[in-house]
Amino acid sequence: MAEHDAKQFRGRGGRTSIKLGLFWTIAAVATLRAPSQGGESNPRPRAEISATNLQVLPKDTSPAEMRELMERYTQELGVTCSFCHTQDSRARRLDYRSDENPRKGAARVMIRMVNDINNKYLAQISDPRYAELVTCGNCHQGHSTPPRFDPDGQP
Image (cartoon, rainbow, N blue to C red; front, side):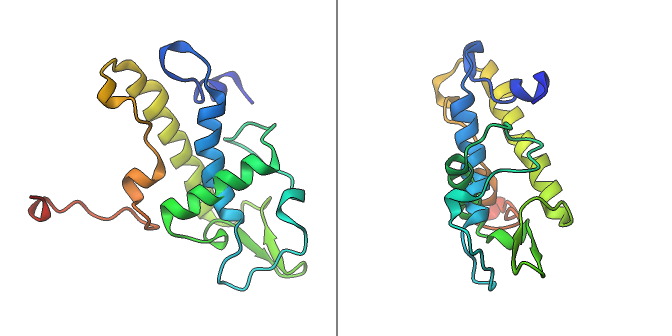
C-alpha cells in the first residue's frame, strides 16, 4: 500500500487507526461476498477466499475482515455481491478479482471519498458531535443510489 493510501486509514489526532478504517472498509467489502438471490454459487467456503486485486484496501486484509466489510457494504447499499462483482461463467461463481464491472471502480472511488471525509475533514473538527465516522450508509441508506434530499419532506 502506498504511503498516501495508508494515510486514508489514519484516525483523528494523528493516531493510526488502521483497524477502524479497515473495519468500515472491510465491512463494506464483505457484504459483497454474501450469497445473493442472483443465482451466484461459490463452492469454496467464504473463509478460504483470499483477497486479491486490492487497490484501496490494505493488501494484508484477512478473509474474515474482507467478509465483514463486504457484508457491511451490501447492507448499507442494499445490494448483493453481483452488483460490483462479475460472474465467471466457466467457474459458475463470482470473479472477485475482475475489474470488468464499472461499479467496482466506482466503489473504490467512494471508499476513498468516505476515508477522506473521516480522516482529512472530520478529523480537523474537535467538536465531539462529529466524532461518529461517516459510512456508506449515511448517504445510501440501504439503496444502491443515494436517495434525493427532499427539503419539503423534512419537519
